[in-house]
Amino acid sequence: MTSNLDPDARTSYRLITLAARLVQRRQDDALAHLGLTRAAVIALENLAAGPLNQEQLAEAIRVQSQTLGRVLIRLEGAGHITRTRQSTDRRQFKVELTESGAAALEAARRAEINAYPDDPGIGWKVLSEELAKFVSALPADREHGVVPFAATEHRTVRRPQGGRGSGLRGVDQPRP
Image 1 (cartoon, rainbow, N blue to C red):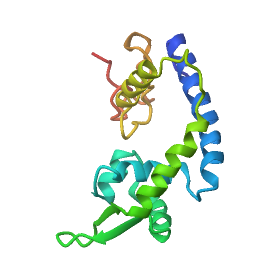
Image 2: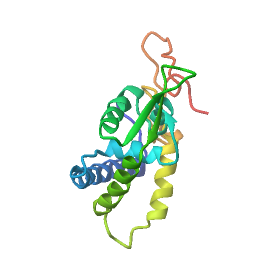
Image 3: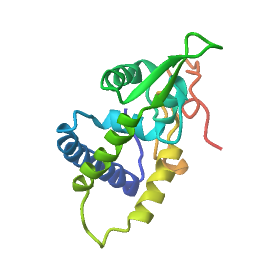
Image 4: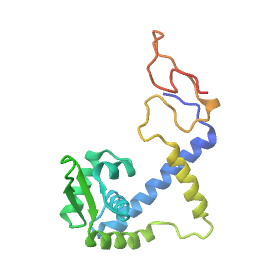
């Protein structure tokens, strides 16, 4: 599938993915001695404000509940969280941070500090604000065929052969 990405968007997208890979490698190294993964730390961070059910937690960190379940099993085994079946819906688990989990999260935060560049010239607040807008602009469930990051005037309308629409917004219908 070819796309008509704005050249600045394409460059920015590539820089975001490169930066993410580099930081993730450094985070992995920083967390290894704690027996934690990035996914585990993200789950712990999202539980720091209070308990959530597994579906809410999965939605907050934009992963499938089943994927999160594997992370939660390891965290529960390490004593960092508790999972309790909900009385109103026995299929749901209330997930809660333990004291051990709070301590592990604090240790992870200290360890991760070394994963980030220490450059006073980086506008961290601006970067954070722009990345937050970028993440918010991404749909939680990406529709196949929709080209993200392309300015409206750069998106092409594609119609499947046979004249029938695919039902995918942004593919069959022109953008307003």
